[in-house]
Amino acid sequence: SLENIVYVEMTENPFEPYIESLRQQLEDQDPVFLIGVVVALAVVVITLFLKYFLTSKTVRSAVLLVGLCDSGKTLLFSRLLSGKYKRTQTSITDSSAPYKAKNDRGSTWTLIDLPGHDSPQTSVPGEVKSAARAIVFVVDSAIFQKEVRDVAEFLYVLVTDTVISRNVPDLLVACNKQDITMAKSAKLIQQQLEKELNTLRVTRSAALSSQDGSVGDFEFSQLPMKVEFLECSARGSKGEDGDADIESLEKSLAKL
Image 1 (cartoon, rainbow, N blue to C red):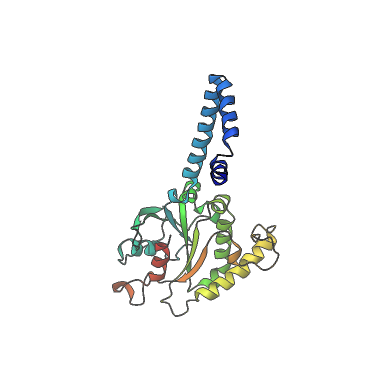
Image 2: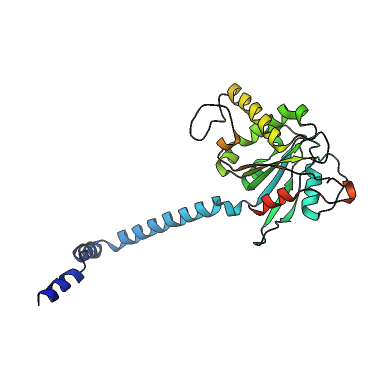
């Protein structure tokens, strides 16, 4: 019937002639040539897989504690790892230990406390930057007004670094020592740093350009990485015998 003829015609594969032609061409090719094509394709696939695997964010599992001297990095390092207060002195070498994030996934990062006595350009070694999943930039909120230019200089070196710009780790600015009466708020610290970084951008050939290419005052939202300002106190409001006030930082680390 007419319906059967139409049905048969519709169910026929319209690509069948092309497939048959391709099959015939492959059969006519030299086997050595075909093997070469297969090997070349395999190499391309393996190369792309390795590139993706080696540069994937999953292999960057370090959380870096950086900042100026005496900002409280080492005490924060101790509090995050054990919750305990520990008398500290200015670090001269880096320290590292596994840190288990407070999340349901059971994420474990390598927490690295880097000394702040070196210049910003040498404070973070290249291999450490390459492994960074997140950078916790610790600021002394109590004397921030006095250190704002040095803090901005350090931050500028970090966010314009080629390795960090390529890997875009999360940047958590931990405004520490909030237990001290004269401590500046995270909001004020962010505003002041944006002003200082804008000045540095102007004087250093606009290396901190915005993502959309617009011209204007610098804001942290223009950076390619996620930036968060938070308040904390590694010492805690109750001193050495009490707990640290670092819940906001722990929550941010749990989201990595």
